[in-house]
Figure (cartoon, rainbow, N blue to C red):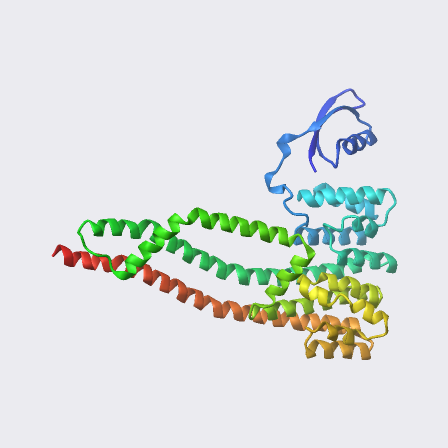
Amino acid sequence: MPYFLCRLATEEGRVISQSFFSLSRNECKKHFEIKGFCILSIKRDWKRIDILDIPFGKKIKSKDFIMFNQELVSLIKAGYPILKCIEIISGRVKNTRLKELLIAIGNDVRDGKALSKAFSQCREKISTVYIAALMAGEQSGNLADTINSYIEYEKVISRTKQSIKRAVIYPALLLGLSFALMAVIINFIIPRFSNFYNEFGAQLPAITSALVSFSLFIKKRFYVGLILFAVLAIVLIQMGRKEKSQVWLDKLKMMIPYANKIWVEAAVALFSRTLWLLLKGGISLIPAVSIAHKAVPNKYLRKKMSNLAESIRHGESLSNSIDRAGFFDSLALDMIRIGESSANLDGMLKEVAEVYDDRIQGKIDTFVSLFEPLIIIFMGLIVALMLLSVYIPIFNLIRVVR
């Protein structure tokens, strides 16, 4: 959504220029007409285009959305009406995508729609869980506390995602540096030693000769490899847009040793925490389960849970329905059964989520602590190999000169 540069005439006859962020020219014109200005001209303000705010994705960053909800709760508790809250927050939000969303939401609320209804028209940007939480808060008349529960939920989910990302990024960075070092030595250092050494009519050592051959092979096949990589990337992107392909790719992920346990426990924790939030907000079990299973990121595991609501509707208990999904372990099932029998299902679901969050964090810490020395050893072997390929020819060269 762009900025518009508006030339306005005040009631006193002064002409002023103002840059305004709006959904469209008509919205911009309507905004200033309500304030009593005479509109002279409206055009795009190209100077206000921020490259960093170009919306490459559809979703809004989690930290920005959490901050918005924290401000919203504060203003609601201070007694402000919903529309005024949205207008105040949208006026100072810097994130372009979030500002655009809030302006659209404000327009819908101004037209008489409930906040949950306004957000439900932006399902591609906002999670179904948040919309359901708003609906529950509106129905119970306790919107601020329901949003606070969602903030707590979102913070935990965000921390877990960040922990998983850090666990993956660090080893990937070390591996990338290792291959970069290997590429520099193979492509620039080894060939120079090879040319210099051949001038003396001596034969290169086997390790150096192998690296030189590998370097020549890479240089000759570089474009072929680049084309294959581009084709593979395009195929994966196209597959990622189809539901069946996404399920198949997520099923492949479950075959990765150790990581599959983290994904399964993350699914259990996320489902349990989402269901807890919805039940606490006052949503009944069947619609809450229908929403909660969609919060599981792995589509293969989500597909296994697709019949949960139907099974409960036919009289089965939640624990028995979950057991049919096939990936909940006995600990989670037993805790949910206890919650059902003690009429404290929402409290026990929160306990399940916290237990599995701790287990995930423990597995991530173990993964990092074990993988880090392996990467360091791998890098050491590469460096040793490179040094040997460089220094052995030097030592042989000394013998040849003598």
